[in-house]
Structures are given as C-alpha cells and as structure tokens.
Image (tube, rainbow, N blue to C red; front, top):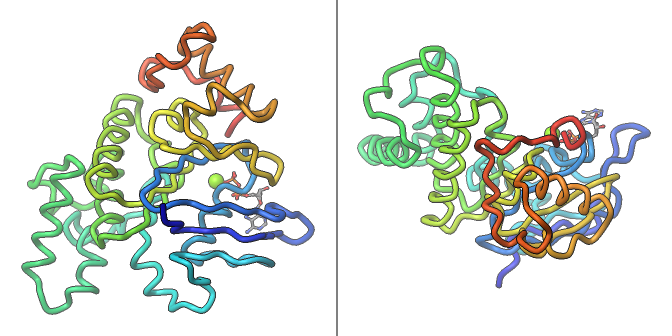
Amino acid sequence: MKTEIAFRHVKKAYGEKTVLRDFCLSIEKGEFVTIIGSSGCGKTTALKMVNGLLTPDQGEILVNGEDIRGKDQTQLRRNIGYAIQGSVLFPHMTVEQNIAYVPNLINRKNREKTREAVRKWMEIVGLDEELKDRYPSELSGGQQQRVGIARSLAASPDILLMDEPFGAVDEITRGQLQNELRRIYEQTGITVLFVTHDISEALKLGTKVLVMDGGEIQQYASPDELLRHPATAFVRRLVDQQRRVCHLPEEKLGDCEYSSVGCETATEAEIR
Ligand SMILES: Nc1ncnc2c1ncn2[C@@H]1O[C@H](COP(=O)(O)OP(=O)(O)O)[C@@H](O)[C@H]1O
Ligand SMILES: [Mg+2]
C-alpha cells in the first residue's frame, strides 16, 4: 500500500515544553486512523501539522511523498478537509453558502456544479434539503456538526482531519454521525485522521488506532491487534476500560461491538 502521510523525526515544542519528540509515523492511503491519548499529549498539534497550520521545529511532514514545507499552503489545504469540535461555521452564511464555500472557490464559473455538490453532500450527511437556507444559529448542535462535515467534504479532499468532531453532541446523534462518517469513508476511500478521547469511538471507527502518551507513540495498530496485544501498560489500561464498559471477559474481546451508545465511558477524565 501507498504511504500518503509521513511524519519523519518530527519535533515540536511550545517554548520550553516539548510536545512531540522524534515523532515518526507513516499512514497509508485509505486508512481510517483514530488518535487517542492523554490530555495535552499532542494530538491536536500532530493533526495541525498535516495541513500546515503548525510547522515542525525539526523533521518533516510528507504528503504523497512531498515535503509540505515547499508547497502552496492554500492548495495543500484545499485537498485536506478539516473538521473540529463545536461549530466552526460562518455564522453570517446560510447552510448552503457554508457548504459551497470551497467548491465556489474551485468552480468559480460553474454555479450549477457547486449547487449539485451541496445537494449531494447534504444528502450524504443526512441533512434535509429544506435546511439549506437556514443560518447556523437556527440549527441544532447535531445539524451544525453535519454541516461542518459536509463542508469539509464538499471540496472532495483526499485527506480528512477531524479533531474531536463529535464531542459536543448527544449520544444518539453521535452514534448516527459515527455511522454516517464510516459509510462516507467506505464510499469515498478517503484517508481519515480522527482525534477522540473515547476509546469506544476509536475502536469502532478506526482501521488503525494510534495511541499516544508522554510525547510518544504507544502503539499504532488495528483495533483487533490493540485489544489482543496491547503494547504498553498505558494501552493495556485503555483496553481494560473498554472491556469493563462492554462487560466482556478477556477471551470474548473479539465479540465486542465497540458501541458508544449505552456504553458508559469511564475514560473521559483520564484520557481527555
Ligand atoms: N499555542 C500554544 N502555546 C503553548 N502551549 C501550547 C500551545 N498549543 C498547545 N500547547 C500545549 O501543548 C500541549 C499539547 O497540546 P495539544 O496538541 O493541543 O494536546 P491534545 O490535543 O493532545 O490535548 C499541551 O500541554 C498544550 O497546553
Ligand atoms: Mg486537542
């Protein structure tokens, strides 16, 4: 498989505080990577380096084999969707205008193409077409989140970065959004990097899970591998929590549905 994103010996510090030291990771095209770790361990920092919002102090980030430092940042970002927690919609624009924002930049001359893209993405994320003329303040939290996802996908990016995107919505909406995201991922073949503090969510959505702690990668493996062979004590604790919330004996781990809904997460305080 082809490597799409690579961190090569990346170091990042804020003043005296080193957040990432010698961070090395290769992500293959079409992977859905969920990223989990203790609060402040550098998840957001790592994510923002992929679309150039932050630059490494040392080392390099490659996207499709090219160092992003030498690339046009606007071009780079158009090919990388970015969705974060809470509403990041433009408040003075309607749903349609929000979703059309990047497609408009790209299809300047073809309004019908843009309108068609908006319609398509609203349908895919489960937004009723009649909501298109509403403003963000006239939507529920779950609807705003869907608009945010539609907007980040409307530019047809190859890579989607999501930073705790479902943190602010209720459990049922969250379950629906997870299912929709997984379906979109399967239909588009896009590469996804998804930060979460919920181990159930990480195991449910990811084809690979990246566990971080203390500025280091604890494990980067499939959910199954993580559950069966936790690489460190930190990963073992996470996995034990998952087992407790799903009420599963060790030998039945493979049967765990990783369901977030109705599955208490005792992890928030410790893992956030
Ligand atoms: N702009 C900044 N200036 C100083 N410190 C920062 C800045 N951004 C993040 N940090 C610190 O760096 C660490 C990692 O932050 P972050 O990547 O946001 O962690 P995470 O997303 O894993 O919770 C935290 O201790 C945070 O307080
Ligand atoms: Mg963060």
